[in-house]
Image 1 (tube, rainbow, N blue to C red):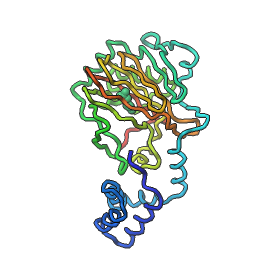
Image 2: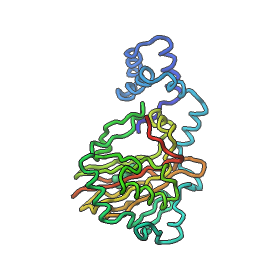
Image 3: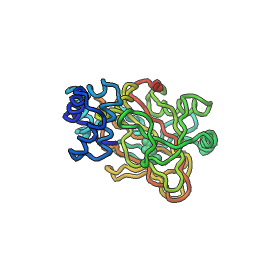
Image 4: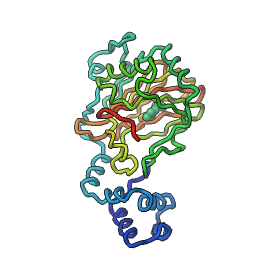
Length: 300
Ligand SMILES: O=C(O)CCC(=O)C(=O)O
């Protein structure tokens, strides 16, 4: 994500706007003060295109302090609140279709590798259900929170609603049983396809308070955990990578990576930085569930 606009810049933009400076004048001044084009444009969007409250909120000391705290994020004594407790004490977790197996664990980043989260038949059915509905995946714009095409996420995607088909309803319930988190905290299952070369460059799944656009999504709750289910075997590449943990998990049909990234006070752990490595041969299909700290109602 782009760098947050700091308070000093927000104050400067606020003053110029109130003094009646035009967008072009502000942009020219920023360039004169060594801002790169992209940052100057971003600042102009915030000053002139976003609702006035957005710029004013950047001047709020409490919010800035909270943002700095949240984005500092290398948390001492990290204690994620969305742990799968059973996966820490046993190697098999009973489920509606048989046991889900624990294949690896990492404490920080907090990651649990799982097998048999879905059967091979379910994986196939979900791929076929999604195949003709996928389109280019997007990221959250740091400026206004809208969807943005970005080279860092080159997969194709379809977002399914909670319970929209019998299989999806079954999976929603299974995920809830597995994680211990009610299914209405899930954003809905999104199915993604990566062709050769496609990737999701390392990123955080939680929303940064310091980013105006991402902050808009927080009104529907913070993300606390992600479950990435692999729907097929990939010939080469396509691992889920955790660069700060020096950890990678290879996709295999029906397996999954679960990672949780908030402590009990809701602070987010930077160690959860992760991505989907480029697929080198074959294709990769996954189903991802992003889980919030409260019941999720789709945004307007
Ligand atoms: O493709 C992957 O393995 C990771 C997906 C991912 O990072 C996400 O859905 O947030």
